[in-house]
Image (cartoon, rainbow, N blue to C red):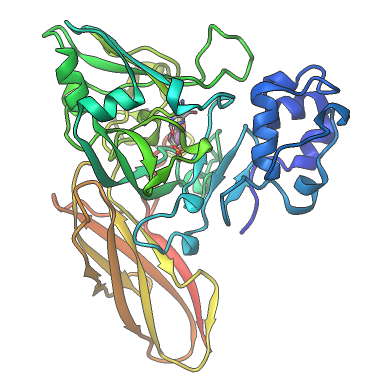
Length: 431
Ligand SMILES: Nc1nc2c(c(=O)[nH]1)N[C@H]1C(S)=C(S)[C@@H](COP(=O)(O)O)O[C@H]1N2
Ligand SMILES: [Mo]
């Protein structure tokens, strides 16, 4: 799979100090020499796969050879493709997302800032305040003691997944297909915690805050702070999670505490969660305003300029599917039959059907579709396809949600490159 964004050599060739800051974090900058510490050092260690005993001797602007040889890798992540135009953004190739429940090693990483150096669960505090009658500060063990602990498989998809296919291009991480995952999360219900805090009738929106730092190094700025309307916040499937797939959460997926707000853009699921503030207005935190996570309120022509005031906040994600077997580009030796499989999901809805085509959409075959493990888990599909003769084929997948909405063939273009739910197409050569 092709690497997108700037490659590590380009970054370092242009400006080694800036590259250090972009790749490893602000605390390596301006003098990594001898002073690499804190979050920067932790990030470097995570990328290199271990602590660096002699880090004090590492020259600034030196590309660690482990990164140079293998490209960026993230400790305890497997097969992810790193897009390195911002600190640690990595997606999973579709054929590695074949498991019914996404293993932690395959869960994508989308960071807007620099992860915190300290992710110690025993000293972690969550503050719940704002438009509530009983503000609280809770430790993780108190969350576990005071509220029912539940395990749910929940799908998280980045709002920008599929942006790489926009034409004209949209700025931002050039995600192809793999900024989506459906892990099992253990946590307490956000709604239970909000009820305990006794939300006032003035409540309109939540505001989420995390412990990661802004890329500029300015401690007064948040890299991202988004929220959801109170009605969505009260949905019983939102979790304040402390475990991923029955084990401690991966550091890059928000350890030790994160929100999982499934069905809506991944950006609503704050990682390294420190505070939930209930607001009496639509939250105006970082990446809530302007054109962030917003699309025009009406269809626009590709490349169109749209006035800012015509943008609306993205709420539920649209229906979508992903073929996870076979890998696109395979050659099938000597058989006209193929078992295809994948997953489908649909924002706040369930998926009613998945259909597959091998003839560029002229005819469709209904796939077997499983029920989700629970609401907001993706649904597994499979089908046995029979090809009439050898040759080049494309397999197209098209999911339909329970309201009858289907994936389109083409992208509904928008200026910021969000919500690409066009059909997944893979290439197959029948030999
Ligand atoms: N604190 C914090 N939370 C965050 C982010 C972030 O940069 N910082 N990125 C958000 C975005 S845009 C997405 S898509 C999801 C990705 O979750 P993951 O990295 O665990 O896959 O986390 C969200 N939560
Ligand atoms: Mo995202």
